[in-house]
Amino acid sequence: MTQTGMPVHAVGWSPAGGLHLLDQRALPEREVLLTPRTIEEVADAIRTLAVRGAPAIGVAAAIGLASSLPRATLAEVESAAALLRATRPTAVNLGWALDRMLAAARAAVDAAVDAAVDAADASGDALDKAMRAEAEAIRAEDEAMCRAIGAHGQPWMEPGIGVLTHCNAGALATAGIGTALAPLYVAHARGVTPHVFACETRPLLQGARLTAWELRRAGIPVTVITDGMAASVLASGTVALVIVGADRIAANGDVANKVGTYGLAVLAKHHGIPFVVAAPWSTVDLATPDGASIEIEMRAREELTVLGGRQVVPAGAEVHNPAFDVTPHTLITAMITDRGVLRPPFPFVVTSALVPPPV
Image 1 (tube, rainbow, N blue to C red):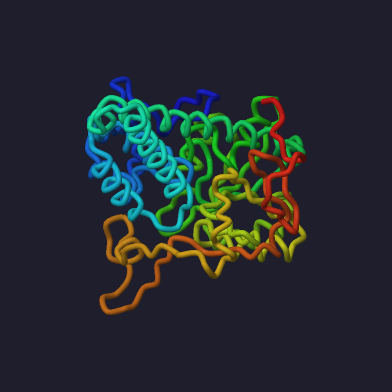
Image 2 (image 1 turned 135 degrees about the vertical axis):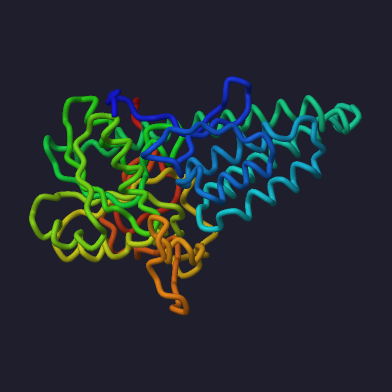
């Protein structure tokens, strides 16, 4: 595959003003572009993981809501938002983005009423304009967030450092250069190129299919390992940093991320290796007190029982297929956010000390 040296753009606006997605179900064999036109198609793309990664899901939902409901009423927008919200319960950015979109839509209607304009007009052009503007703001903020995380992560980026990551928290998971992979991309652009060990991430292989694909495309060395090899790789001394993304961060600092993350945190602690979480501030959910309060999405049985089109689990055997697990905050060395680097006890309040540097 041709290496461009640049991260891929996975989600954004299509030339026609609709939603543009790189279908992640087809990678790495094929690059398929999707342009969902109806709210049902947007919901299906999120539910079936054509788009995945908490920030990318939020951006896709925002653009999809803004572009798939021309001249809709406020009630129709609210109904569509409810449909999208139900697709993936664990990733907080989905609900966060939809709440922002609904607030913008309601404000447009309220403004029309205050101006003594027929509210129906606000459900037409004015409502469309307000939602498109908010969706673009969410997309642009996500892109800037990635750059800020990349800049804040540079203290860990030493020449030739071995970095282990899990699942995919790169450009494919955001509207920018990623969260966990953002420091790697920034370092690579500066000529400080790490070597990445990517856990394959069963059962859907996001590490093998997606992380390895985008890093190779950008010219960053990557070695794929099975999830079961992580312990021996960490014990070998070739890895000096474990960095992962997050789908939801509870108020006490507990982190929900792709299942298998918790085990890596335990292993990193045992081997004295920093375990770092990289995520935007929007992933922090102050309404969720701790990890035990996070709803964990359960996925379909077939994701475990069928591999490469072949039945690999005997009929009648039970399966357990959570998409995420929760890593206790006590195992986390630091969190890199777009507002700065946090260390235990993870004070999730806005402070003047957490201001993104120029990037």
